[in-house]
Image 1 (cartoon, rainbow, N blue to C red):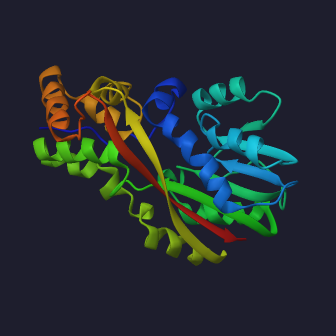
Image 2 (image 1 turned 180 degrees about the horizontal axis):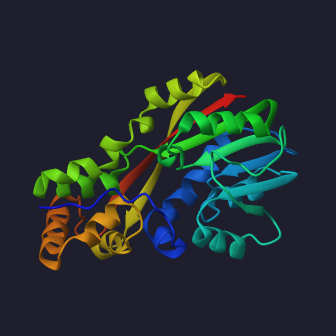
Length: 265
């Protein structure tokens, strides 16, 4: 079976929210609690997406300012609608942050680093815009392990179509392993990096609630699902349904794990 190229292009905010954004919003406050940054700091969220992490910063961290940088206009539109007047949003990317030198005290990034083409360039840019001694923190999904809603999808997809292996985020993104994440951040010159796991429950009242977000076409797994013809997509759907831990009432309880890292600039 021919498979599509990896699709890491996120443009539509609402399909993203239904697929994985709703779980990202649960990780964000747990990440900030672990980061433990004092009040009164200037924050930057690199790759802010639809604003999940920015919203949590505004609610829990008593910042003096928050700036969100994001390349997707579709995501920025959602973020601006939900956080108008609370966060300054700018178009940009991790390698070209539209801020002056030493402009912020804390730099964070949620579920983005693995999609950055040149992490080394991004770390240099983060160090440029941060003050000396600033806090850096980030988190990424554990694609190869306990990000279970995606793991069940890709395990079923590869069983039916071995060529799908090259699209599997668990294979494509070694940065999303804790040892590699720690090594990358330490190798960038940041001090005393450490990692931790953040687990959030992902409850689906029905299989349809689990499956429907994969039909939104946003991100690698949904893009792959929508590249299949109807017969192949139905076969994939049925294979996933057979492997998921579906309860007697039809509900499905999974875990979404993120690996988080923090360090000093």
